[in-house]
Length: 199
Image (cartoon, rainbow, N blue to C red; front, side, top):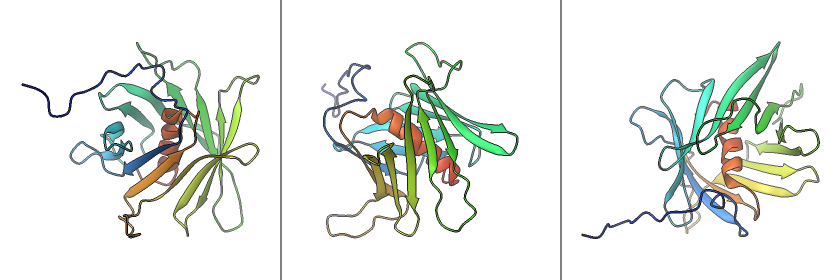
């Protein structure tokens, strides 16, 4: 008997990087009963990423996984004196490489009122690092990831129906620009949620 939803085998090296703009729907609910986390769907309605945090909200260790439960990133909260920051460790096919983080996110300190951006360093090698900034506007429910020159990398906002009605604060849409590793962008989104205690 044929399967209703057959699973296509996708090569692991290229499935997170495309030459087209990608749109994802993020449901801020875990697939695990009473768990914290989120579920990410692609434009075809297929689950592509998930975060299932079995502990409490704002955990110190969180895993971004694909639909099969393979860990793509291990995200750890770190402290240095009074400063907190998050590091993301990419998992290889065999194991998580905890030796060197793939990215680091720290919240910028501002005394004035308003939203403060997060500084992101991707590729912590000094010769090949990329700097991004996570900008938020809580009044507009919008979050953008921009590069050093201010170019848009990804945008996150509340999802609207075809009639323009908000689907709720726990249903979001994320648009990722072409030639960007969207698994990395999802890792940065997870850190953004941890900073704001949404996961």
